[in-house]
Structure formats: structure tokens, C-alpha cells
Length: 415
Image 1: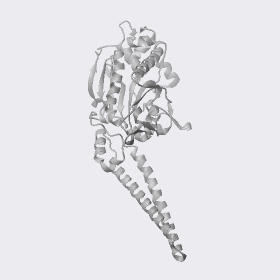
Image 2: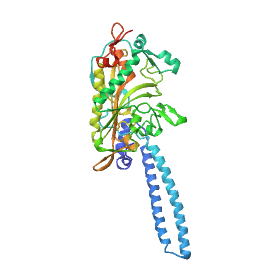
Image 3: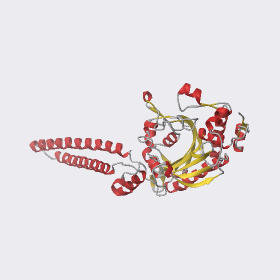
Image 4: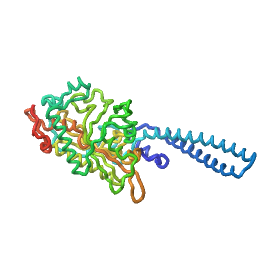
């Protein structure tokens, strides 16, 4: 969450950020709720102070005067209890409402409200003007089976088989090796988390409809290992000298894909279950902007190694998730669609997640809230599709990028 002090000290900053996001959140109601809570809390504290003062005087009284004073203190106690109860109730209401407030949009984020409003920063590689789509390629090569997956699990699932399965495993190890060299600690985090982890990272309440839940165990399946890695240091004070702390998490991810009915139904571009290697960073606030650019450089280096044409997009403010202040997408070229599609993204969430998760760093001037960033190193399924479409050959085979051949053990996939 953002700093609640901004509601009182600089509400116009929040108003402008909400405007850029296209949000209709009622900030005036939130400010009024905050004021009511603080007033009830102040009343409770004043009544407690009066109660304590009266208690001191009682010790020096006798007889009727003492009994009268005791009755007065009893009345103060009841009033104080009532005020404290109202303060607690208002505090809970304020917290619930304040969780709806998204992060402040970075001034350098692109303007606009939709995916199409994102601003292209650069374009790398030669885009092929024709080619088969990944769905037909996967079927012809016998490495993707969505028909049987539909029989077993329903729509938006797929089997990877044969060299397709080996390609996935190769991509994971290749990505992890690259990230290890870049200073990231490999991690395989849990994919089932408690609610506080999703609330702490900003996926709740905004994206709750996208998350699979297991009510019996009060657990949720993550849509990204960002959630597990962010919560890893929850309620901790890190040593400032150890920052930045960089993790690379591999996990299976689960998303309902609510609201995408009829979109990307062919193949396995948009599915309910996929694997991903994710970067996550805890860092000093003044270094997060530079780190965001570094994450983008890491992502670009990986895509370039695969010899896949791509472009980088500065995502529009209205298309940002609740926790992101700024986000870059890398969109690979897909010849079968003659279109660029997102395969990685990286976001600076500033202090939004760390404030919710209570993650601080110890420094010379005391403890302060850290900044967090996340970035997709390799969305494995979509990366496989980009390789298939961009490395397809006239004879129907697909050539494996040189960077992956030491990991796959084969140079091509034949029909």
C-alpha cells in the first residue's frame, strides 16, 4: 500500500495517480474515514488520560467524595471503552478501504488506459512476414496436445511431449544458469500460499477473481512465484549492507484467465497452468529505478540469445496492475499471427508491497521500508511458442537456438 500519510499531506498526488489509471475510487470518502478514525482514537486517548488522572486523585479522597469520584471514573471507563471500540472498528474499515488504493504511477510511465496505449521504446530483430502459427506447428511436430488435455482437464490446458517437454526443461535450466551468473539466487518456492501473501503483494483485492482457491485449507494457488518470493521476507528487517537481495524463482503458475472468454483459444498461449522463471529483488529505495532498467536488460539479453525478434513497451498507466508504479513489457514477434505478443514483463512496485508485508532494511539512519521489483526471466510456454514460430523451416522442422543446444542435446525438432 502507499503511505497513509499522503492522504493528509498530499492527497492531490493520489488523485492525479488515480486519474492516470482511470480509477473511479472515491478518495474523499477514504479521507473522511481516516479523519473519523483518528478522531475516535484521539477521543479514546483523552478519556484514558482523564481516567488515569482521576484514578490518582481517588487515592487521596475519603468517604462520599471518594465514592463519587469512583462513580465518575466508572463512567469515564465506559466512555473510553466505547470510543476505543469505535476507533478499532473504523481502523478496520479504513484498512479494508485503503487496500483498494493502487500504487502511485511513476511520472515516466506511459499515459493511456489500454494495452494499445503502451509506448514502444525499441524494436529488435527482423520480423518474418509469413509462417505457420504455433498451434499447427505443435500438432505437426507432435509436441503439443491440447485435444487430449481438454479431455482430461478442460479448455486452456495442454500436454507438452517428446522434444517439447525436453525443450521446456532446457529453457528452465538455461534461464537459471544465466540468472545465477547475473547474481540471482535460484529458488523453488511454494505455489500454495496463505491469503496474507496475496494481499501483501497487491493481488488481493484487485485480482482475486483470477486466483484459484482451496477453501478447505485456506490456501491459494499462485499466478506467479512473485507472490511467494515477496512474502519470503515478510515481517523482517533486512541488513541494509546485504541489499540488493535478488532471487530467481521457478514455479508452476495458475490463473483462471477470467474475462478472456473466446480470446487465444487455439494452442497454449493463454492457459490456466504454465511454468515460469521469475526474478524478484529487494533493494534500497534510491536504487530501484536503476534496478528496473537492469531487470529489463537481463530480460532482453535472454530473448536476444534465443534469436527472437521483439519490441519493448512502456506500459500505459491504466494498464498497470495495482502494485506496479511502472512496467515494461517485452513482446515477441509471432509470424503466425503477424503480431507482437507479450512474453515477459518487469515492474517496479516501489514500497507498495514491502509496506504491506512489513519488510524493512536496517541502516545508519534507522529502519526504513525497502523497494521491491519483479520481472519474468522466462515464461516457458510462451517462449517455446516464440521459438517454434520464429525458427520454423520450409520443411516443417524447427531449429533450436544455439544457446539452448547444450541443454537440449538436439539441434532441431522434426515433423
